[in-house]
Length: 543
Image 1 (spheres, rainbow, N blue to C red):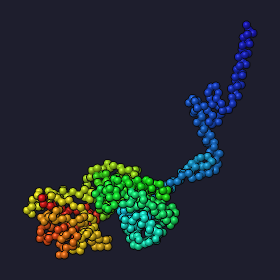
Image 2: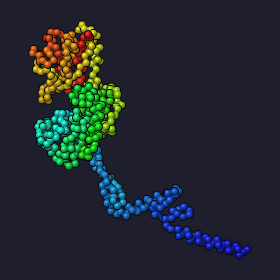
Image 3: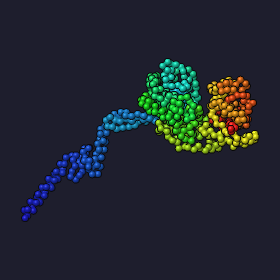
Image 4: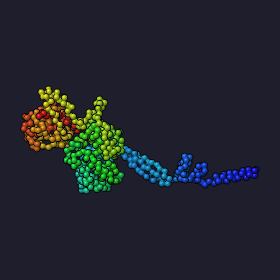
């Protein structure tokens, strides 16, 4: 019995020795029966291991990474990506070590300088009028804006002028806040005048929605790239806006006189043609910014004639879109207001909303949340709302009734005539039968608005019609024997009377009339063209 016990004891002792020896010889990198990973070799653990196994494996991985990086005594960094600095936005360069994959980022400070050359027409005129001041207000220290202007100039025409080396342009250049115009300029001369940072191209609005009008674009881009003095200058595309819904522009018919169709066709061509070109680095979404603005309380009337932008808030909106796209600047930091257009202050929230919407969604309309015209506190530095948005002469009817009654007229027997106006224009019945548009060198420049058409005495505006004129304003009625016949008598004089009735004697047998409106005394009224139209109200006898 004792022998059996001793034999059992010896056997157990031998088993223990063997087991202890085996545990010491477990190969590195294998898992022991207790589930503890041995060694530091990465990637060997079972994917179904318990939490303790995963934790140990992560620690081991980190240890290996640190060991590898430690072995990289001299990093070999290679550039893997670059975002160029803009005038008001920092850029950066990202590097990665080719040996150990360590990475780092190097900041490129904003340049605080921007030089922009536009090759365009009246729409680039609209877009760049306020651009210099907005860029300066946004924080740019050096700003130069140049615009090579030819009215209604298409890409085909630009290429004709380039290939023929023709001096067809007016070069509008702004280096200090004042635009200087130089006539008979060549593209090549403007191109070499500055080390431009951005060169902006544009297709005329009537053609921007049609693919077959872009055939010369690559030729133009190649010419610009071959002749620019700054090798890093970027080509940018300006996407124009659609016409006003009631525009009478001849080319509106090409879009079925449909504003949204025009907008969508322009957007489609940008997507199909412009975005496909790696030679064009950015698109300025002016057209979307304007379309966004139209969804706000501002409404559709953001133009001065159905297609060119309102001199104040319309041009400001386009310029702010250029600023945001080209400089990378923050729209919200800009609060500069044009001296000649103080009413822009009231539109600025809607303008900024529209531009920010266009920057975040450049090819779709963003519906405004600003649907109510803001109240204005004049005592706290506010300005009157420019009535170019919502002309409402009807607000004056009650006042006009009182004035008419004092002159023995019951105004309830009359209806208010709705009439449209043309800015910086006037009629002159003894010299011409069409509207005259004075140039900037004329003394009458920006001093008048006028009716957009002649009115028939027989069917629209007969004798007995009444003109009511507010203080500080003046109107002049031009009379025409027939629609296309000048008046051979003495031209009527201007009128400042508050109440004026047209008589048969005044008409002198003439069948058509039109009128001009100006301030009294005459001044530049370009900041309040639409306001001028509300200060002359015309009432026609009810039939």
